[in-house]
Image 1 (cartoon, rainbow, N blue to C red):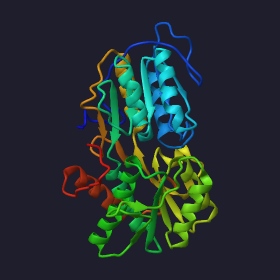
Image 2 (cartoon, rainbow, N blue to C red):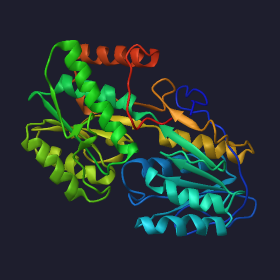
Image 3 (cartoon, rainbow, N blue to C red):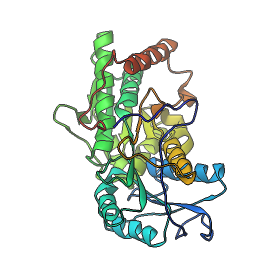
Image 4 (cartoon, rainbow, N blue to C red):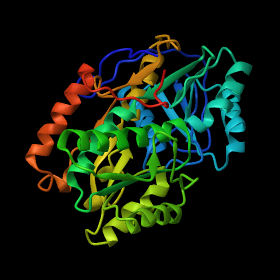
Length: 354
């Protein structure tokens, strides 16, 4: 998959398509008529995962704000068994655009898309063979590489850590980038910072096996802290909030790096979040839906791929850590970003979107 175009200061450029009408269970939809309806199905992380479901919903709401002819709504899946029924109910309600959020929904989306070839779908974090499913994917390894470098430059114990929600490509891609960023720091600086929680070579590591339960996130995070890590990056959706909360409660014993949407905006734990590995789901969804509503056809073959170059991925500001991150380290991150974009510092992951 190739980048469709650039995101200048805040706007991604994608492609699009359409067909239908109607509202459903949650938020924001009136009664069909001439409205263009964009209907979202969350994965099991739910709408308030402080992560990509939250970001996708924000993208739909932004599309609605940009175009008064667009109506948006969502249904939250409680279990994987809900995916097909939830997608199907929106087909039956004649939604113009049906958005599936998350790689966990890939198979269900293919099943429903095959059965309804004239229905336009979109999916975050997956690419399916069906031409009516527009993929929005993100090379988050690039931004996580920067985060790993930041963590290595900020650690006091010489150990940092990461863990995931589930062992799936949209999660492990963050972990691959993070540990490689730490390794790059070691190579450049002649240091030996250890990255705990993930082995890129074996693709094995620490997981909560859940994207919701905060106690599971706290448990895994506490284990990494007990092993000496003083900076942890959870790639675990809402369960990661268990770690950010524990970091705040620790009184500075350890800090965190958030992922997906800016943790200082999506969680109450900014005081313990150094930065966030941004996955710009919001803008990708907004542009896809608004262009579709304008009658443009989504190109499944091209899809959208977020990179550092088009600002589809990146690092958030340092917020409350701005004065704590050395100016030299900030400058190194800026240079490293430019080198990754230029291809002089390669970033690889088995989970990178193709």
